[in-house]
Length: 220
Image 1 (cartoon, rainbow, N blue to C red):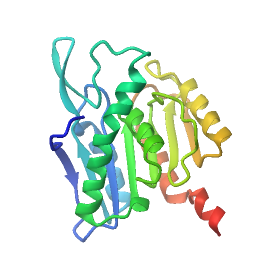
Image 2: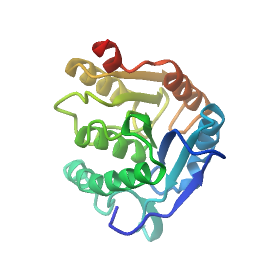
Image 3: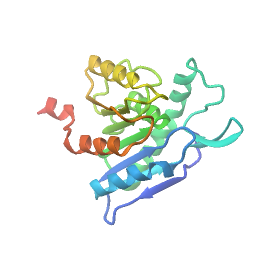
Image 4: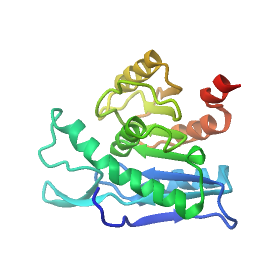
């Protein structure tokens, strides 16, 4: 991501919003890819503003694609650094949307698919509490967190048959988060591959509607 304003698709409520969802597409995709999730969220949370930014245009394998961080000569060794360098621009974008709509950080959720999920997880690691919830669909951590976010709840959603990002990575991430004392859930669907599947989206809504953040219980 760079400093230029991001193009966005938006679904806005008829009345002033009380919640904010920011949705991040996968590698080589576009904001349109997130429309099904946006529609479901809009139906489930009628007072929510839903914003879907477009990643930065890059040339990859001779084609113009959109990504959240550079993928040219991307390796396991440089992935974490590239993701970390892209997070500040995403954080600025989210703050701009919160200010634009007058939405609290705790009433903001960040969802991402694949590469977008990696960005969402990295943001929760660098900016605890900037969003109240992270929904990570089929995307891994670029680097394991060394501390638990205390103000952000993390929901991991994955397909067992995913051959792009193995489901075992989601299980490992969940185990690492639990060991750190994080507030997190992990849902793995048995017959789903690497896709933003309706079953995973429905489960995400269920988590949003039924999971009371652990920090509220701790402060009670």
